[in-house]
Image (cartoon, rainbow, N blue to C red; front, side):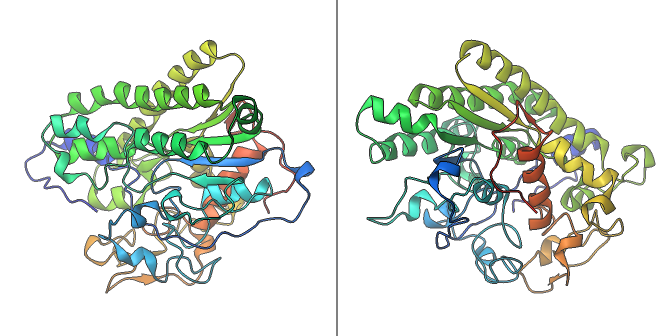
Length: 393
């Protein structure tokens, strides 16, 4: 991950920068496609899923693009819970996108950059790239900090990949419309890295807050482009409650009790996530009014995840471990930047299922499962997703 010197920053600036560290993107490795169900096609509300975003859903594109800065993601303990080997996912097991695919009887999405000739891609493809931004790389170069970007494969680049890829899916406009009408498009989570890079470059509070509208605009423009390509059902997620993350709780420890809510999460970090989510919701409302024939679904990641901290036992989590990472190098929240998960000095817990956080930044399979369940079964998708033929246990 990127590190920033905080010694010359004010306490208020430190708080806002911490929020902007959200969704740090790590390397992903590809894995073999696996079919989640053998049920007939008639049982499937969606024929395919197409995913765009960053490390919360990347299944191998970042690594395939040549970015090898964090190879630990390609070895155990990553992937230990479900796959029993490292898959490249930034977790101990499956991600939200994996559970969504399972719920609709579709295969896990193969990464676009690892597709092979003759591979069956009609059930969906993953275009997400760890480290990706909603804004194009040029935005950051114009402001003098483009060199710190992990990848240039921004959301618009991912859209270009899809447009090129679309030619292999269908030939006529009629065939494409019919096929895409029954496909689900996941547009993010994306945008967290845009704030990260600006923060690392020393942007002040006003500059960082001013970035929210242009980031949201980039997300909604991408959504609009997909609609123009034929998408009629799209899910656009908001940001997670980053103030509950071991990373932020470790880097920005405070002795002031008023900085924390009743669950021990930092208020300022979560406030920024909510600020982004509010602007995104308003923009999606405008987009819905322009496209009444399309279902644009807001996925409330924040609300779905915040429940863990209100009633951890209800979700199988331990209250004692809820703010700690399962895999890390020690400290109050088991996050040590010099001994991150997978590095020398780190150790994974014996039971990830009672932890919500995996490595200090990303969540465990258990947490991702509960979020996916909340999106599909309700009430954290607005409007609701189609009914799933398979229940997430």
